[in-house]
Image (tube, rainbow, N blue to C red):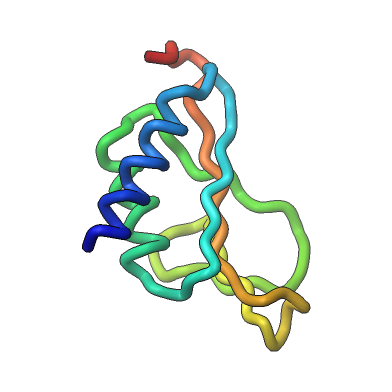
Length: 97
């Protein structure tokens, strides 16, 4: 619970510092849903100017259910150590806090 609270604080503050149209990449080396898609879903709920930006083509990725645009990279198929990644964008018309 403490890790997830810290991650929510970090992602929200990072997002709030974005300029309109700016992007933030949220990535962890965890496969824990509550540290990954739950954190991204939470940000999307509390920051109405946030949206997920589809990831570019790359190594084989698995999209989490109900979170289009985010992805897990499996170490067996992606030549990575395994990770979660989501790219987020602040709406172009939004003003930073």
